[in-house]
Image 1 (cartoon, rainbow, N blue to C red):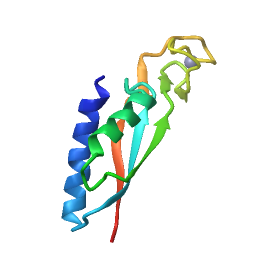
Image 2: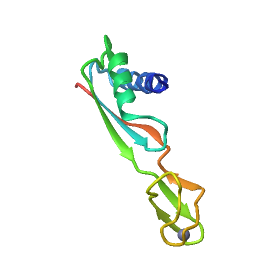
Image 3: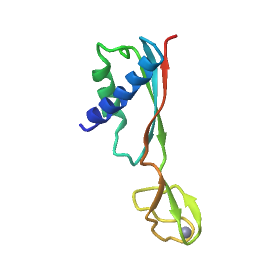
Image 4: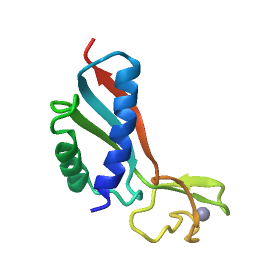
Length: 114
Ligand SMILES: [Zn+2]
């Protein structure tokens, strides 16, 4: 379950942000995760809950915004959201190899108690 390693990295940054703010309690962690990032919702939530135990983020909420995959068709010069894992342009039918969005995994915000 590689989500544990990913979440460890995220929480490391969460605690850095919290201590820079002088906060001793984290209320929520906001992430933006691409649907092609290889991270699954359930293991991610599970890893979060397991790793925050006994930390200042013990009762924090994990909020994840899932980013849909977006490709770019070079023939049509337009972006599209593929229906499946074959990134076929809905206009010209060409298979795109340019992925614009959907692979990200970003820590967007950390809410702390004042
Ligand atoms: Zn096209």
